[in-house]
Image 1: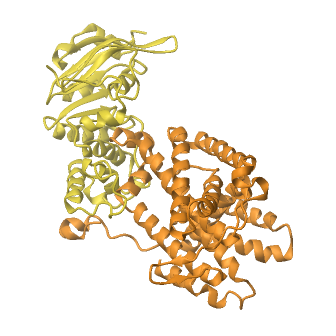
Image 2 (image 1 turned 60 degrees about the vertical axis):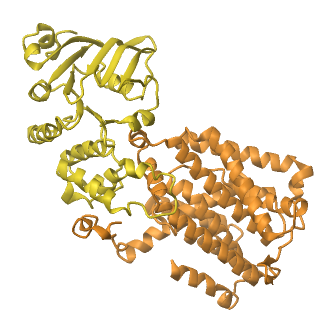
Image 3 (image 1 turned 120 degrees about the vertical axis):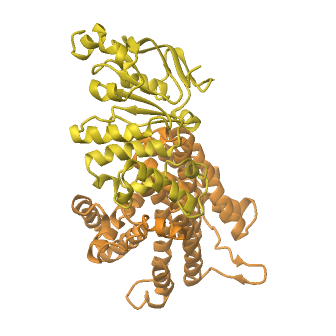
Length: 247
Length: 325
């Protein structure tokens, strides 16, 4: 049984069907990709999987537990973290605090209104380790909003990592990055691969094909193909979808 | 922090020499306490509440009613006022904590108006528009000794003690894990939710704490005035505390609301001595500040005196693991 499974998800906004019969499975320890053109329903799919929207029909299972329709915070606490396509950071916090606030150690002390925040040296060390991993340790004291775009992308991932998830969803981590930034981000993802289960949404085919163990292609709100990069290379549907010929 | 407390402690010694009067000091301190409590919601949590006057008023009424109907003991009455207001804060929070921005603001106005209306109409409990009169300034009993608060100077020092207590408590609160999480929610509710925080509960808790402390300030005001009236619950009184907080710079500075409360009452008395239209001038000051210096008086002060000392860099904690903040 896979770590994360979705069965027959349906979602409609008004009379528009956004997801139809979407079934996905992400194996533990693997890096899976979700590919498809703009507006195909990739991000909506993520939003259903992470609790932002409730599906009209279908089930979502994580670690053998039914999490369909649970709140984002409940799903996050079970060990599912995500990044966002549009940057979603705590802009006025320092880089350090962005990560520190997301650590479970901070969260469990949320009712503590009397002691100093981040007084625990172990917590500080944890946060700095994560920043080290994404290459931002030397920017720890800078405000998040002062970072360059590429660095903010890395911080976006660092915040998700700070949740110490079993499963990490990355929503278009390369959005808006140049080829340099892409290469750096690919290195980072490669470093994380194997340490935890990762699912990436991406429409950059090259990026995904070089990293993923398995890819699902979504188009018109449905999964139209699924397989390893090698299997998908020759698939006419995938090619047509990626070139925008399926509209 | 210590400097501002010492400053306030010295006020009764000179306030009459500069042509003002002791009661003004009492008013400023009470409203400074109230504005600090209000700023927990507006400045620290980023929740625009325009109905906070209701909590201030409920505290005042609860203090009066407790001393008439329960027992005329200062501590018990202050406690009742705080708890009753926190409870009404919880009631409001239950209805509005899933809202944000303008919707939150509108809901707080609506609830503020409801409480205000009830205060005017429930004649048999609140005295309606005549107010609740003959509220006593109860003596401070400490077991072995008892102090009388009938003199304004004595009341001033008692209010100062409460002010110090409330400001210490709030200072602790905003720098605690709870306070930082609230600050995170202010910046990005969505992200806070997706890193596992139950945003609703934090927003509700903030409103309850702020309401309770506003009620405590309201109780002190009932003592100062020896009565409680519905007008402090009205929309424009709720607006005053917003003005105090913004003029003072509550959005950027912990002490901003205190500066704002001082500026507000000084403007009332000093400009008010020259013209009955003092609110026009204070209003203009408000407009000018919001347009050109949204950080308020505290922000101006900070730009003059250089940036406040920066916190010890967190990266230093690595070399010296004990030094972490």
